[in-house]
Length: 579
Image (cartoon, rainbow, N blue to C red; front, side, top):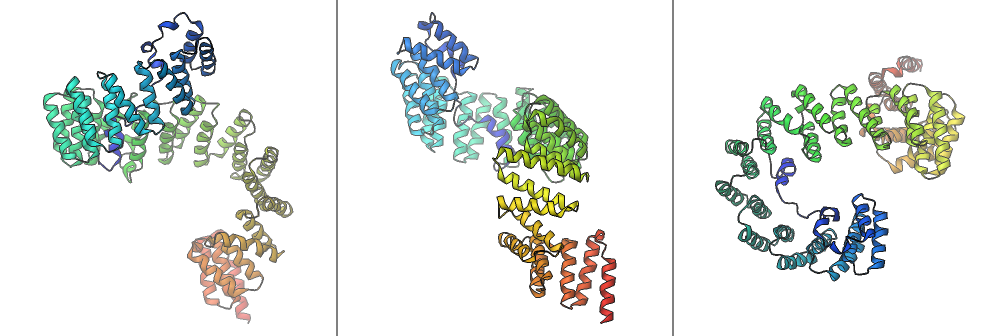
């Protein structure tokens, strides 16, 4: 199950381990602990606190500064203003305000505590250590300080100070589950796994703890002692029958040993528990579903598992996308689409939810649905260019070229008005050029390629397509060759770009040069393209390498029968016989 180098250590073991740096506690969590008795009759102060607790920080900030206008030594007002600065990610201002609060009332524990956490968030570790060391001297009975200090020492690889601090905690409050986990942390920093295991086993003999017993099970799993691992997981369930992580440990043992019926018996209720951290669930589900062969062997059970996970956290967009992708990739596109549509309905003003839903419609090539959803969303999201482009693509993939052209004309007009993203505009002009050429409107096609190149003279798709279509009309070959040359200089191993350049050389009578280029294209995927094989055969035929030319024409026919080369091959053979 849990490899010390693997994902389960990250997703389960670290749940037990104390966080390295504590989250900054905000004022509403400890309002009763700060000295506000002198403010009980101060209406501005009380209104400011209420606004703060309602997360109306702008109003709260204004009111607290009014409080300071009346009383410049109001330490609690500085403290709350510091919290507001921290909420706004303005750590330097928060630090200055807290210093002012501490200067006025140096006896307030919470001011010092928040200041120390702010130092950690600001990466001022040495100052944070000194602050916590001073706090211990001022407030020796507050064990939370000791645990934070232990983590800070460990972050600096100061194992001895970590041990001495932990010894002080045990002197004050005795051995507890928390001290055992802290001791495990210290051992793990030094990678002393055997000592860690011995310590936890002995601790469990004195004090029963489901959390510790599960951790012991994880450690035995790491050294492949499955029988003892299972013994301690079951012992954890004896201590606490509902301890979910022990059930997870058992499930992973069964998964590792290929006992999938038992694995799903334990893992389904674990992962569908609404109290499970959604991030842990997403990480685990992603890794399991990406295990080669796992889905094919267990599709029915996974269908149940994924459905339950989606139902348990319906408002988590990322998890919903993972579940929807699973269903789409396993042949149940309807179920996947349903999940993402519900997520979009839940967050119907969130454009990210819309595009997540749209991405699955694209993946499943549901072009009618793409058109419908884009039309409905275009007004809501104020003519979003990505939505217009998606609408155009929905037409293109249904061979509705006229509608696609009109949509892309609308897209280019929208992008011109915005005047921001020229990269998008260049791409849109190029696609519009392609659409025009495919509908035999070469004049409009070339005009749009010119617009694209004018904006970006190195946009390779426009340069390549423009050059190739000119060559098909046997027009402006020097211009076509110059444009094509830019593409192969930028991407010398792109077989499509090489083919265009080689074909223009062929049309200009430079057969040996064309042959050399196409041979290079063959090395980089050209043999997978019927068009490139056909062009190579034409060049070989021009060089009178007839036998080899017909071999490549036969390969082109086999690769892409729709090219319909039979008549051309027949004519070429007849021409040889006449010579």
